[in-house]
Length: 205
Image (cartoon, rainbow, N blue to C red; front, side):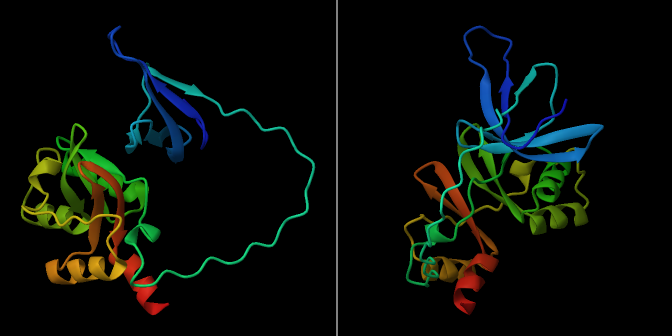
């Protein structure tokens, strides 16, 4: 099954009382003989999809060409400062794992999405964060990549922040907890994630 970025995806369920799951293709991964997709779902989550018989891809219509207009000159956006809200530099949407996904799935998701950390969910409730370092430590300790679950690897206490916190506050949390990724949430909804690299860019600017 082939899809392109921007195509819609429907996953049809086997029960009549549940509507199909709907999402949009964010990226096409793998090779042409075994494609899989990074999909952003309508519920705000993002995950890898390996298409099956219940998957339907709806191509995005090709837009009609419009007459060219004279571009307007936009003022460049001001660079963020440490006193600004961290939502200005957060990455979104956040790529997630189910709590029962294996270490192998976690490693593949990290590699395919080219990110350093994932948020682990129990249903729609965020449990914590799992990073590349967590996966490496679990494997080095003898963990079976197909038997150890994502929920087994997340830290006892995950440090969270709010999108309205300042970049300086997030930098202090990272320093004090010795972490490189920090998820942002509003109540029980994850809205973004920030890496130490994002903070460093602001500090160097």
